[in-house]
Length: 267
Image (tube, rainbow, N blue to C red; front, side, top):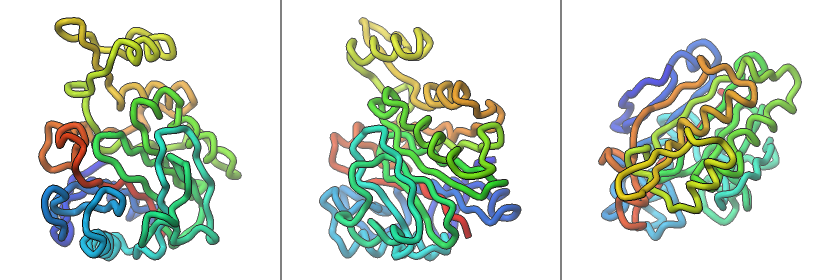
């Protein structure tokens, strides 16, 4: 279902089938096609990383025009690597769309059933997940780093969506965007032990010289299937942001870089 496309000079991973059938937009951005200068070149969408405000605003306008939802109608989070997922509606429309400080505080996921607005999260190695229930016309977005995976933020987002009438887990679609891959996500012994304890030995990949790595998409897929989503309804971009120069990577840049987005909208 996920498809790599280029629109108006912006590289995206989208779900064209949803746009045509359901009037739902899902989009994961890359780093190219914007106005930001190094080290944020070029489609940086985050205000809080040290980039020029004017450049970020231009980038958001470019992406918003392409998506059909202007930044004034976006809702974003002040992400904290936790498990809190907020339900948002018309009163929250615009929060975090044209600045950082108005974004929904201390949250790592959003869900909504309101048309004409976009919800999203920003990443640079963490895993962006978009959840969609076509029949109930509800959408969710979650920001998943290794801490968020331990806390189960993807399952928290699913739980908030299931609060809506007629929304059922077995009908849910899950889209896992670009993130740091199991080739690069090295973690310490304590973190590896926590994942073994919470998920099992299969959550950790043992490397040379006692190193351990995590497969975030595989971990979240396991959690979502355990929570009721059908495995066949989970789609992964299969892109490592540290290996692929088309994406921002926090680890790959030493911490000084921009952010890409995982967004969803009900049109």
